[in-house]
Length: 501
Image (cartoon, rainbow, N blue to C red; front, side, top):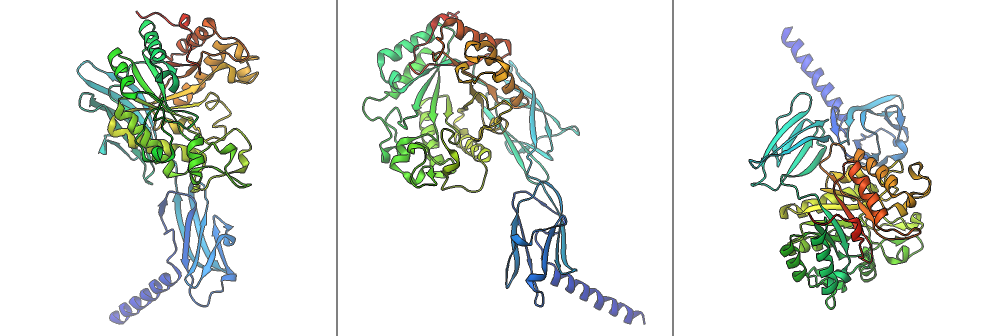
């Protein structure tokens, strides 16, 4: 009797397991932890089940209209919010299969609380992580306290930069690039291609740095015209004639002048506004719903990886020439015109914020072996309540991959009553101070530094020493000790600058 009982039990168990397998095979599996959206769902449907009778319930809501049926079963992709979900597949009132799974697409947060560069060559860093199960320093595990705090010590003579990565239980990863020996606080002015190409005018810029508190210059390597200022060897530049092979910058001579005079060199690169490439390679351009290229044919598709490769190629070339920093401009989606008619041929389904951040991560990874600082210019209102303004410039997201955020806080570019200031252009101190405070809030807890662009040009109101000084004073008052001066004509107001000490 005992043997018979055991035999009957095994037969029943086999039948139950076989029945479970016949009705199972559901994806996501029960207990799965997932990232990514939409969530892919599939399940085999055995014979005798009419697809018309099938319902696919997620948290009680029927998503059958999204399902595709074939002789193998059903499959579907459903966008879902982060959290716990219950998936049930039924035929009429009969439950065919069920699965409980969790979805999490939120990366952990890394915050740097203190940074101490000691005389013995050690850089000591303290910080906290939120939502991480592991913290890695250049892929080596770092000890985490129960409250998420950590301490690091790095020899800055051995490594100029390190990568800190926080990973959660779902595999979401947040990376932060840290410089162990950061560059000096930079106060620089803009230099156009044409000024850099003229020996007399460029000498005047070098002399201005030598006479004043300036210690850096930012040179257009690739500007809004799509032209590269020197004879580039990047294949796509040569193919499209983007390089100035005659009358351009003698880049080796210019870099010698930087080195000899101790001037910090920044290479400005306009990214996604490029009428030359858009014209010569229309397959890389933003298209219009009405046909042809959008917006007078000046914009490249930010989704296109060949475009990313082109920009990285020029940045790498500039780094090899001796530039210590690559500054990305127009690192955004188009904004001037009816953007509802934009068509992005390489669109991979990611939103604009994700795409710009992906591009910055790609640039960071590509430049990392060279130890080059990476910065990006952003609109002055992107840290305000207006958010990314529909152009993909999410400040907190971008800061993960940048050494510097450079907001263009030109008072003339703010509308009346922004920050409750009636006429921002006539109140340069107040508008710059208010805007920078918003950026400081957005960057709080990150390793990304704030270095704003200040206005040294005139539009509606003439700008001179008083107006430039008012902006510099605003920077100092809110604790921002680095800045850049912009004048498209490169005629800067020396009276606003402190003489070299």
